[in-house]
Image 1 (cartoon, rainbow, N blue to C red):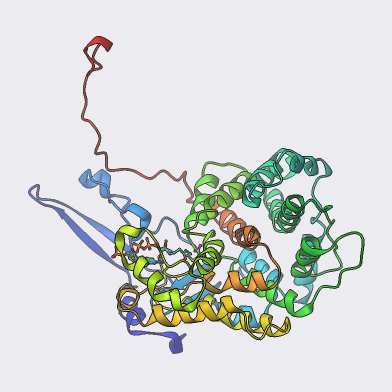
Image 2: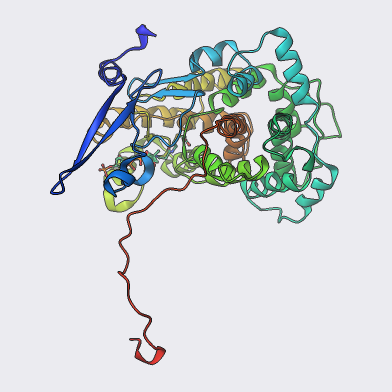
Length: 447
Ligand code: CMC
């Protein structure tokens, strides 16, 4: 991985060695020596588990920006260098050389599948694509104009009421089947959420199609006529799924782990992850990017919009820009931009005004001191919305699609956590700044 090293990653590599940190509590003479735990790559971590028992203090890290809540072998990100690896493989190579199901296998099992393993895994997924017929009736309970993420959260959560035979989290076979069920059924649940919203009949999955093809089929086909899946669009969809498959300990993945740490079943945990993904700072950003581009409307209005973003009291952000971890170009954004051009070419769209606008916005922002000094670059969502729109995907389904892809990462992270013998219930501490101890006054004496 030498060719990927940067000054920042080299500097950090210096700290990736066994050692310790000694902390002294001023004025008490008490100190504690905390071990450093090195990772395979990236910065080492200080093991603070003895801090409270030795010094009686906690650490304070709102947003967990400097806290590793878990050990993981699944995904590695070097945000300064713009590197994303799954099980050691660069995302660029995975997006180029693998299918989504190969990546799903890799995330779940640690290694890429050989031919036989892939065939068995594909069969395992495709044999679980249908959902319990009674779950169909859940859809009728929703308003037609419900956001599909609301439907997703509810129907995925409801899976725990149907698949009782795979709920024992301590049984490896149950965990395996639950993983298959989740990866296989979320596209069906998602496509049906869309079909319900437009009043079209649900399309049952077709197991002769690939994962991406089947999803496009269930979204776009109608029973009245045959539907041919466009192979370029299917490949683009597969790539979009790969690019969203996992991203280490982000908000939704941490939510899944936290819910799972209590022993909750995997369907409940993934439903929690979907809820967490929904917000515009996370998975909802791709939808928000399109709304922002529509609001800007024309390249000539970009300076005005950028000025609004820079005015702190406006509360307006450049959606699709910035990332908690990437302080350089998000590597997924580069692949997404390339895929965007391929899709538009395939669809015969020479000039997509939204893409032109997005590219101009990117050019202006990446040259602006405000964004440069804060290391704000385009993230994966900056271009994904444009591709999805060109593919005919309704805006409200963008985050749903993200959830379909991320289910693989969530269930892999959940499985890793359950199989970790050191796993404990997740229970953060707090810095209490409320009222000190006081007595309850009688009602008549309260102001
Ligand atoms: N537009 C304008 N200013 C920004 C933006 C942005 N998109 N993102 C961060 N900043 C500014 C922020 O105002 C702050 O400035 P200052 O230091 O003057 O107060 C500075 O940059 C640091 O921001 P932060 O909020 O502390 O950064 P964070 O790590 O907490 O937030 C983020 C990360 C992704 C929530 C944020 O960059 C953001 O809101 N981006 C827009 C939403 C978005 O595109 N989200 C998708 C993320 S990628 C897909 C995913 O993981 O779901």
